[in-house]
Image 1 (cartoon, helix red, strand yellow):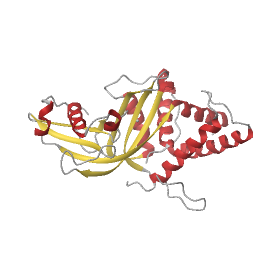
Image 2 (cartoon, rainbow, N blue to C red):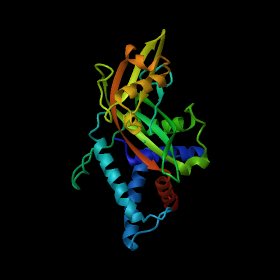
Image 3 (cartoon, rainbow, N blue to C red):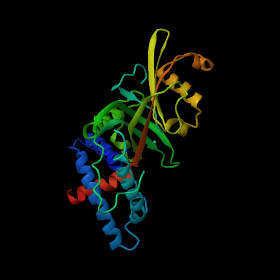
Image 4 (cartoon, helix red, strand yellow):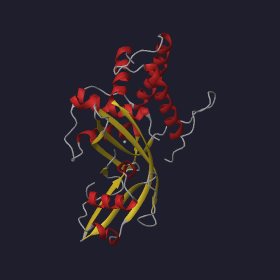
Length: 283
């Protein structure tokens, strides 16, 4: 399962690129985030009510939620099995996205976090007025990536090279949210309907008028859009470039691979708060 640290690392990669500085490694982010949580807990205990964050929220109130996300994500990741036209395994693939067990006992030896996985990185613009999300970039790969290299690479690729959008600029960072989805459990579907809404992402391929088409949707897309399974398939075929009649979609022979994936997301404010702490402490 994706974690808060994975999201921080993606923001770190993009922020460092735009600021022309050397980014932290994923291992450094993991270590720093743990130290940050401990430090913030101590600060909250020292000040009645906790310190105010930039948006007026008490830090002591935000930390439990962030900590639960971190612990749940880390616990889940240890048990996880590890496009506009043609798609093949390992191809850089634009996708569309809007956006566990309890922590180990204190004296248990936790397994190391997941180190490689197929992945997608999604950037969304968050409306300050309404809180709505608008897709700003999303690209990933079905080929397992070393997370240290893969997350940083696809954070930049999805932010700067998604041809559906202009490259993200530094001035946009405060309005952004990043989501990381790690993909698991790839299976050939028995037919076009052999998958479950809210559980499976889809990767389809098909031939139409002598050309091969393909596209993918992440597991959360159909539910976020409120689509039925049929509507999801038609939309995915349209995304791939199919221009046939909507009521004739089931006459096209689809090859469908279903997969699963749990995403984690993080807004810029939480990244900036952590990043300011890093710079202030020299970590």
